[in-house]
Amino acid sequence: MANKIIKTEIRIKASPKKVWSVLTDFEKYPDWNPFILSLTGEMVIGQNIKIVLPDMKFKPTLLVFEKNKELRWIGKLLFKGLFDGEHSFIIEDNKDGTVTFRHEEIFNGILVGPFAKKLDNDTREGFEAMNEALKKRVEKG
Image 1 (tube, rainbow, N blue to C red):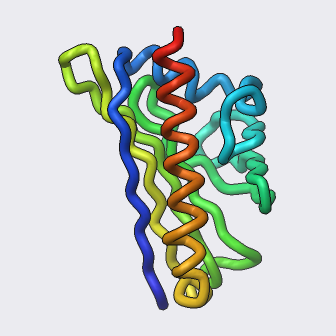
Image 2: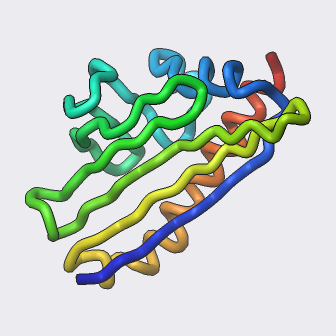
C-alpha cells in the first residue's frame, strides 16, 4: 500500500488565538479560502463533517479539535485502504508574536501511487494557496 506525505508551513504574525479564530470561522471560508470552499458540520470528535474542495466533496471523520492548537480529520474514498487521507492544521506558538501554521496530510491506499504526481503538484499548491490566504486574512486584522 502506497504512502505519501505532504507538509507545508507558513509563519503568521499573530497569536494562536487569532489564527484559530479565522481558521475555525467556517462560514467565512468562501470569502477567503481558495482550497476549502466549504466546511460544515458539528465539531465533535468522531463525527463526520462535510468538506467541499474545488474538484471534490467528501465527509471525513473529525479526529482532533483542540482550541488554538490543532484541527485534524481523516477521510476515505469509497472504502478504507483505497485512498485515505489524514489532514491536519497545527498552530505552533513561536513565543515571539508569530505562529507557525502547519498544513499537512498523510495519504495511504492503493490509489496513492497513481495519484502521486497530482498530489505533489495540485494538492501541494492548494495547501500553499490556503496558507497564504490565511496569513493575509489574519495579518490584515
